[in-house]
Length: 327
Length: 266
Image 1 (spheres, rainbow over the protein chains, first blue to last red):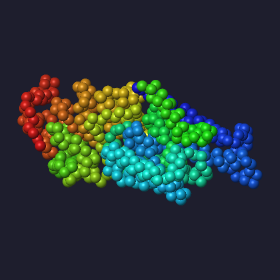
Image 2: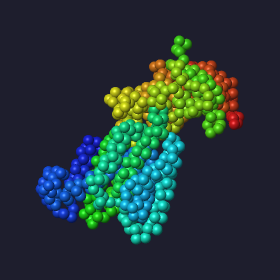
Image 3: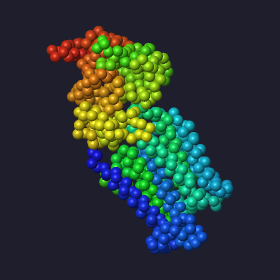
Image 4: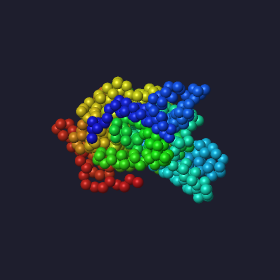
């Protein structure tokens, strides 16, 4: 196989950014309240702060649809880029943003909050993520230098322990079990402007990791000897794994466990554009954002079905097809 | 050769791995411009010695210094500017191309913000040309043969452009043609004033490509001799089997192992 199989990066970037723009427009256009594109344009032109003479449509677009589109886009970007980081650092095609157990931690934290009825589901879920991540880093620290399967194992086990805790919560939750199940499925339906700040922080974390460590990620992924090239292996790996997990924690604690994006988008982009991380990371941000916001718009217009289900049901077969064609 | 000063000195280096002493008070010096071969039976500590020189392996005692300075005073990136390393059995099963892989040898030269410059790619292309891989720049590494892959890793070490290059059995999985090609590149490195240090199992290859032999047995220095002074008694003592040494009309030395089993070391 030669490099000829790769698509040009500039074309891919242009495609992904146009797809993202299209997905954003669709996200703002489609919904229960129908409006024409001209009306949408008028509302957008009026800006977010025209409160004195705010129309109903203005409120729908700026207070409901806009934060939702932004939340799903940023979440998609963060999930896809951290998936790229995880697969490179752990040298494992099965690695994904939840490999270090943050989804189990989030689920446990959220179900605790729902069960006790104290509200604060997002902070509780984030606390769960942080606890799971701390436990995994502590358990797997020695493995970060040499034995990567140690840290993967630590992530799987800690995630399972928290997952079992969450199942226990469900068992004793009684009539609150449906709230837990609904949270677990993941949804952006409740996104509002207050969610945007933590998401921007998580995007900032991922962006800094991408910019600071793209060359190191290449070396990690190329499976070559890394220490003799002058990389401080254990510290760099720990920063990348913990940073990406932390960024994902903001997403998973706010909107539930959305699978697929962080696992498949990196594979998909690697097949199309090759393994060099400068391009891979640059592509993963708009591609992940476009995919998840488009999926969320589709989910929204299909009676608010869980967005995570939709991404897997549609994207899974597409990826199977690509794998098949590639052989 | 005598005028060249010692650039690398290894003094009383001992290494333990999981409670077992693998290297015992190893000392030797090496000059720029010579090819140093490390020979010895399996388990004698060849790879461990290379890792100790690189600073990848903690030592119990002793020190390794380059141009008079203890290398443990350098950080990893500085060390990567002194030592390049081609590990044993490198098989990067990656989808990176040859050029993308070789340019990674320039990693220690990257500035704060990273990103390889045009100059780094020029140096990588030059390393590819010197290792005879021209035309392979855009081939994906995972699609190459074992010999080609080993050559790619050698090219990456060349791109690192360091005064010392450590190669752990670079020819062990290669056919004679590829092995000779790599030996030639190593000789050229020494001629250009570098210090290649090569661990080997192939005695003949070592005898014909190196200037000096460091012989390791049971973690100790068994001998430190010019390659031309090899004799059957030294080899017999090192490997525990008898040898016949022949010098060919072209000036090559051939060492032929004779029947017998190595004595049990440990």
